[in-house]
Structure formats: C-alpha cells, structure tokens
Length: 363
Image (cartoon, rainbow, N blue to C red):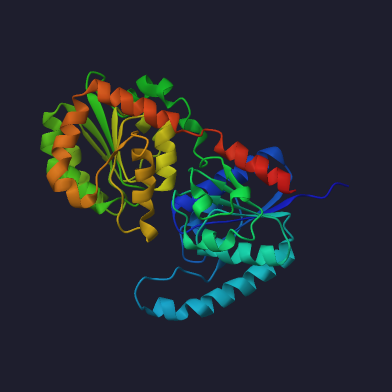
C-alpha cells in the first residue's frame, strides 16, 4: 500500500503569511487527494481562526516577534523560543511530515529550524521584496526558496532561489470579464469612474482619515467610491454611506467584483495586495504603512515604482501631494492606460502551481 503524503505548513501573524499558506495547501490537496495536512501557527494570532475556517487542523506555538524597544515581550522571547522549538520537535516527531513549508512569521521559524535539524526537506515562500528576519535566518539550511521579486540573491543563496510570484486568489484572474456584474452588485453608475480604496482587512487609519477629509473633493471630480475602511473603523466612517456615490464597507467579500468595478485603486502595499493588484492590472496609488517591520510595504511599492508601474505616496506627503496627484491621474486616460499595462506585465498568475511543482521535486 502506498504511503500517505504528509505536509506541515507554517506561517502567520498577518493575512499576508496566512493566505499564501492556505493557497499552497489547497493546490497540494488538489494534486494529492489523500494527503494529510497540519498547520502550525502562533497561539494568539489570526491564523488560529483563519486556518480552521479553510478546513485545516492547526497547532499553536507560544511565540511572538521581538519588539524594537525593551519590553516584557522581549524579556520573555528566549523562553518562548525554547518552548516553541521543543513543541515543534514534538509535533514533527509525531506527525512525521514528508516536507515542511514556511510562509513567514515567527512560528514558521521554529518549525522549519527543527525540520532542517531532523533532515526533513523544507521550502520557504518569501512574499516581500525585502525578506523578514525569520526567512533570512532559515535560508542557509532550506532546500528551496520561492520568491516574488528579482534581486533577492542579496539575501538568499542564489542556487536555491526560484521566482514564482505570490499565490493569489484564483477568482481574480480575468476579473475584468465581470465588470457589468460587479457594477450591478455594488449598485454603481456605469457612466462614472470608480475609485476603490483598500486598507487591508483591519483597515488603515491614515488612508481612512485621508478619504474622509477629501471626500467632497473626490466626489466633485465625478468619481464614485467603494471604500473598505476595515472592521476597526467601520463605526467611525459608516455615516458616509448616506452620501450619494459613496459605498463604505467594513470588509468586502467579493473582492473579484470590487477589482472588476474599479478604474483607479488606492491601496496599502502588503505583499499579497501588491501581487493581486499586478494581476488585476488597474492604475494604483500605493500608500505604504510605515508601521510594518523592516518597512516592507515601502520596499514592495518601490519595486513596482522602479518599473514605472504605479504611483507611490508616503503618508507624510498626503496632505501636500494627494489632491494634485489624484486629480492628474483621474483626468488622464493615457496615464491610466500606461500604468495598467505596466503593472499587469509584472503579474505572475501561476505562482501557486509553480510553488507546488517545487514541493513535488522535494518528495
């Protein structure tokens, strides 16, 4: 009887690590129907909800990142790390995986470290243009490193690197075909330009403040707005729903429709968002979060800006530059078309398949 394949997948802390992990698991499950999967995450993080919702088992480790200033959390870090390494060892010994896959975050650090010590093949999927501490430390011992950007041989052994792109939701491919359906779904006017505002599932305070402040200016330009303000901010901004041509949501379930309806997009620049926006191919203004470790978001947006494929606006410049930049973009069809074409060229729509091809090679 053929042995059942077993995979441990670890990644979390943010949606940017969790979503790729689930996409990889789904593709592996499609190829190996009777394979067994176990996720490992950080005990108090969002993966503990999101992974079971996607239909997979998950074990939690007592682990969290290092803060930049002296805190109790930092004092506890050595104890948490020791506890996580020991628990990872017990999980791996009991589950006996064929391959261990890490998509970033501190929990994946402990699991992949133990897997390499036990001689189990490992694959890292790095979403950002500037890798996190965990993946940099794991890279020497990992078998394969799948990345989404060029130029990462500065951080990783060149011979292990494969440019695959980041896994994205399959329903985003050909989202433009759904434009009519999308306009109907959001009750939009097909004669107006649509601005889509995205701050991530939790929301982005500074982007929300900007839209609230400039809403009359935006409406005066003749645009209609789909605004995902995030669940933390919905109560604060829900009253804007009373304005004509403004649609405020805590969270958008039908993202493929939101992208299909959009003419111009304002977004944070987390790795998953950037990958999705390349596939969607719409003119985009990136406003990176300055509060992300190692300033990942600015570096991700800069990588797109370097190809002249998007506009980058830093939070500190919004009050001075936003109005001019947005007015120039929304009135310039040629500029919109150029940005669309260039960002779409950067799309890597087969990322999940290619990553799973690399996992198969390790079996």
